[in-house]
Image (cartoon, rainbow over all chains, first blue to last red):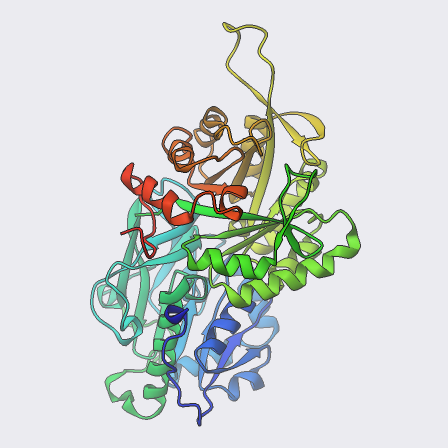
Amino acid sequence: MKAWAPERPVPPSEVFRVAVVDYGAGNLVSIEQALTTVGTEVILARTPDDLARADAIVVPGVGAAAPAMRRLARARLVDPILAWIATGRPYLGICLGLQLLFERSEEDGADTFGVLPGRTVELANAPTLPHIGWNQVVRRREHPLFEGIAQGADFYFVHSYAGVPEGISADRLVLAETEHGARFASAIDRGNVLGVQFHPERSGGDGVRLLANFVRWSAALAAGAGAQYTPVGAGGTSGGD
Amino acid sequence: MLRRRVIPCLDVADGRVVKGTRFVDLVDEGDPPELAERYAREGADEIVFLDITAAPEGRGTLLDVVERTARRAFVPLTVGGGVRSVAEMRDVLRAGADKVSLNTAAVADPSLISRCAARFGRQAVVVAIDARRRMALNADGPDPSWEVVVRGGREPTGLDAVAWAERVVELGAGELLVTSIDRDGTGSGFDTELLRAISSRVRVPVIASGGAAGPADFVAAVRDGGADAVLAASIFHRRIHSIAQVKRAMARAGLPVRAVAGTR
């Protein structure tokens, strides 16, 4: 069991609140439980007020972009999420929550957050689609998110589309890659914004460790170690291209 | 590289894990969340629950079992058995399942597949196909064929299993769970011909089921049957083979598997 219980990233005396954005996208039990396991207080956020109480936000989700954007818009969560990101606060997107960061989804033509330059496209040359199962996540550089996790460790994927960064900063956005027919970006980071295409909440001990790392990194960011992190989107929504 | 998955299947009735040959001679084999957690620790790449509770009043118990499991085992969870509507699928997902497997209800109303895929994405929709081999007239006869059966193999449908597989993928199935009813519970190995007939015609992942006796069968399901994942129940429940033993055999055969303690 020890692999599933990494040391707490938050001292027991402190409360660290993570808002998990709930827009009706299926299973939230796993992510809620995993974040609770690493010592955070989880808020299932359905309104802008729920976000306001949080120290970090996680946007989970699977499926298509258009219905997700519709449900987020109906809950009046899109602008608060964009404002959250623009003010340099910690964001983790999981699967669809990563894809939404880009400008547009080719799956259904939906306009998405536009925080990162690029589009979400179908995986190219995939031998099977959807890409379902455990696959290796190969880092291109180090980041606190992957601290204590072996290079090339396996994480659980379930998706058919992935975000493709574009523009002059595209290369710098890619934190890790995975291969399924062709290589795609399986983790991205820019300043206060992190995204993973896999599901840490379903990836056993390494997944729980990654979430603990996110919390620790978020706490450091909030505590003012943020000088090294450049907030994203402060100058508009089109990113660096 | 994408790993080939090893998936223990837990037949759940009234909140307990049971295993007979499908619906007869049920033997109580334990608490589902406890078994799921043990399998996750031992290297299961995913867990499948098949709810074989016949009575509708047992559904609440199932949702509770799903939620307790999702809170204990941080591996993917697929739930099948008795889901007949988009609303029921939503309830199972919200309880903590990642995927839902449709079977009899999809045969009765194929539009259920497209409606569920539209609402939750195709990656959440598994279609389970129970197939029975049609008797060949003679050894030189046409290629083997299989008929889709429902209600635990008791009811033939007249549908050709390969054609049905292609149809459900068109409708929005993101994965197929293919069970050979002839082999299920017999320990005579997977029907690799059936698996190959289907896996060669669809692009979605195929999970092999029905007939596992030992590690060599798992290797054959992937190598000869083209399966992406292999599912078994009794050989794991009765500790005849461990997940680690199966994965070691697959690794030795050159198949990519996720390392767990003891397989490296």
